[in-house]
Image (cartoon, rainbow, N blue to C red):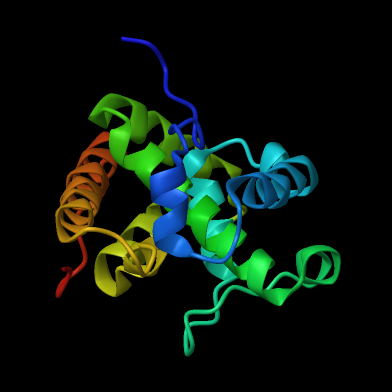
Length: 169
């Protein structure tokens, strides 16, 4: 099976039109290209890209904020572009098989300065990966993502010889 890279989900006019009715696909592509060139291209994992894109979303309002993109393209187009990129990256993750997801998640864990074991135990208790789900996704995508994360955490904990903490999700 060929290796899928994060963000390589085909972008159709229909998918982008769902995000916004006021922006042309070509305009959204410019936002995507700028973000990839400036930020996403240096993030080596799909999971890491999801973490980064989620960090641009205000948890209280669901709006994405990126000063440079807003200055260049305007708030509305930057918002629509960031939301679209987040959904694309999320769907790229969903489309990977479990082995690819495990490798991607492990690479992300290795890139952190924190102890992998502590991170995994904390993730089991606090489930921070739930916040990585874009607001406008299908329920089945959410179910797949959450189910796969539970499986992946279990696999990685088993590989690292870690017992789950009491009260883990």
